[in-house]
Image (cartoon, rainbow, N blue to C red; front, side, top):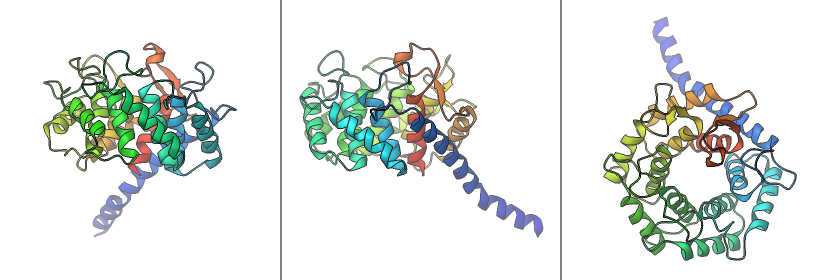
Amino acid sequence: MKRQILLVIFLVLIPFIVFSQSQDVTKKSIAHIISVQYENGAWSRLKGEFPPEAEPTSWAVKVLKMKKVHDDKAAKGIDFILKDQKQDGSWNNNTAHTAFAIIALKQAGVGEDAIKKGLEYLRSVQDESGGFKRIGKEGAALTIYTAVVLNAFIDAGVKGNDPTVRKAIDWLQGCQNPDGGYGMPKGSPSLAISTAWTIRALLISGISPSTPFVSDAVDWLLKSQRNSGGFAMMHDKVPEDPEVTAYAIMALSKIKDKKDAIKKAEDYLAKVQHEDGSFTSNTPIQFNKMAKKNTQTTLFVAWALAELE
């Protein structure tokens, strides 16, 4: 009888233990994030090595507002974002910078005019195919930029039948590789980062998890999860990475039956977090594949875990 009682108590406590671990990782991450804010209210990808700019500042504001902490720090970040918007409505003529600024401002419940101008800019630079490029109308349309833009439109309250949204969804679905994953430009090898963001974008746009566009992509993404619980950029040859793992969590958290994979990912993140709350990753393209402790990865880990709470 005593064994049965102890077993019941243990089973009841497991969710609280897991939740506490996730909370601790998030708390330490936020403490680090706060410690690297610049005097002007902005954040950079890595303080002292990269300049403060709107994109990482948007990630920081998003996280702080999700957690409802450090309103004074978030307010300074919001002020920086609003002042940094360009005349054309963009942030740096960059679709991701603009989309993340919209996401952050919407989370904060401020900047309606700035959001409207940002959406107008994004509409103006959408490729005829429906995809979005990195810099305005320059270069090739990319899945990850299109997915982030879709996230911004949906967060801003734009409906799924909106022409811009519909074209972006159709383009993303047309980019799926035979293996189920999504590459960065259409037809390129599948990567976890672009597959995860595409899954997330399609799901929040109302695409059913049971469609091959999502279910096959999820199957591909799960194959990139290592025994450690972390996710790698590709199935073979490369190690797991905390930022890639954060993106995977952000995608899988939108699907009800992926709790086991998410739990393993959370355990991995808890193990690789540094004492100062930061994470090491080589994912940021600015690092030229050199793994560094950095703010960008720490912000996305905090964002991913905050969505689980």
